[in-house]
Structure formats: C-alpha cells, structure tokens
Amino acid sequence: MATLASHVALLPPILREKYKDAFWISACNEILEKLSSEKLMRELTYRRGVIVKDSIWVTPPSDCRDVLKIANPFDWSNDIAFELVDGKVMLLDRKWDEETDPDTATTFETFTLTSIKINIDGLAVDDYKDYLMVITSGTMAGETIILSGNDASSGGKTVVHFQHGAPSLLDALKITGADLIQPGYYLALVYKSSYSDLAATTEEVPIDDKFEKRVMRAGLMKYGYERLYDSQGTVVAQWRAAFDKAIQEMRSELLPTPAKIMPSSWAGLGGGSVTTIHGKEAPSA
Image (cartoon, rainbow, N blue to C red; front, side):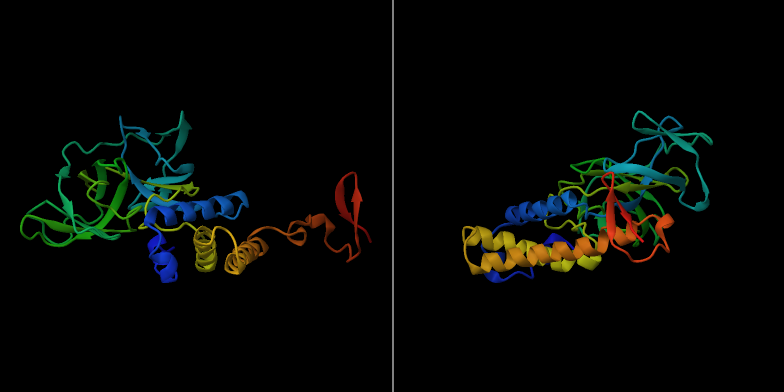
C-alpha cells in the first residue's frame, strides 16, 4: 500500500497544484466508500502489541472487528485462550504481570514511518529490541508499536526503529508521551479490521496492491477534473469511464461469479441452460 501523498504526486500539475490536501483526502475517502459499498474493500489483518490490565484484561484496538489470535510474541506456537466480554478480551490461561516502572519518553522528533527519535539517554545499540512503545498522550494515545531495536544514544537522545511501521506517520501532535514496555510484559494480538477514513495524505491507502494504482489514479483524476470543469466536458467523461472500468475489473476478479459459487452437487450435470425453479437458478440437463 502506498500513501495518498504518493498518488497525488503522480497527478498532472493542473490538479496537483490547484487543490490542497483536504480536497484529496475527501476524494480518497469517497473512493474508499464507493469500493466498500461494492464489497471490494479487503479485510485487513494486523498484529499489534497489547498490554494487560488487572492481570487478565486486554482492550482491543479501536479498529478491531474480529480477534483472531493472542499469543506471547516470542512464542507463537502456543495460543492464549480468551473470550470476549463486553467488547474486551478476557485471558483464560493465566494471569499476566504488568510493567510497573517503564521508561518514559516526552519529546519526539525526526519522524518517519519506520523510526522516531526520542529523549532517552544512555542506551547501547538494540537495548530496546522487541520493546513495545505505547503512546500515552497525543492524538494517537493508546496506539502501540513493537520496536525492532534502537541506535546508540547520542546527545541525550536515541532513534528507535519499528518492526512493522507505525499505523500512520507520527508527528508532534500525534505523540507527546510514550512508555517503553519490556518484552514479557505485553502480548501480541492478531485481528481483522475494516478500513477507516484517511485523515492525512501521509496515511496509506488501504486498497489491494493489485488494483490500488489504477483505481486511485482514475478516481483522483475523476474527482479532480469534475471539480475543475464543474462536472462537464470530454475530459470528465473520460476519467469517469476510466474509474468505472477500474472498479469493474476489481469486481470481475474479487467477487464470485455464478460459476464460482455453483454448488458442488451440480458438478458433472453438463453444460445445459439455466432454469429458474421457485425463484432459484438450477441447471438443466
């Protein structure tokens, strides 16, 4: 998946330079809504680090639709039994300890999708390997990121690196405080999520990689030219058609056709015509 900004950067200057980020975010969200209404948005699977409260309780991420697995991130062979209770996850196998004195970061800079510089000194390379960074304040409070390691401290600060990238590009508003949780004091939760609207052009567009480039280009060109030419003219019609074609191609590959969903009991009945019986289609010999 690519960021919205990378898609906008490929548009003609007449569109790219005329409209600000807010317009492209709105256009992108309309494209996602269109795909969702057509059942063309894939379910996304994520793995997130989660902390345990009161020994047995885990709060799933806000975008969680279905919890698939909970495990010790360093022992994936053994699932942890759980059940859902009032929107929370209750662990059944054992009680888990909480980190009582985590390292704390309060200033952040040099933001990328895979790393961030924090104000913690005295660290050797990879002292924070496999730690969990929990954002405690800022607009992304509650989000977690598993760390792959860190650089050696320099000038009272260190760069920490993310295992799987941040949910979106962090900035000085999204993160203003964070705790660093040692391995052994958190679990990994695997869950399914549906897409959520984009709030910034730095966020990734959650469309299947196979279709993302053509759908986004056609869709953004359509919305851009509709705005530019007040929904009139040949260019607008051209990009509307291109967008419709891209969606039709997704439909043909992602949605089941009658041939794909024919009951197995019909196999071998021959290639006759289809007859309607009591409102349902059945093959005739």
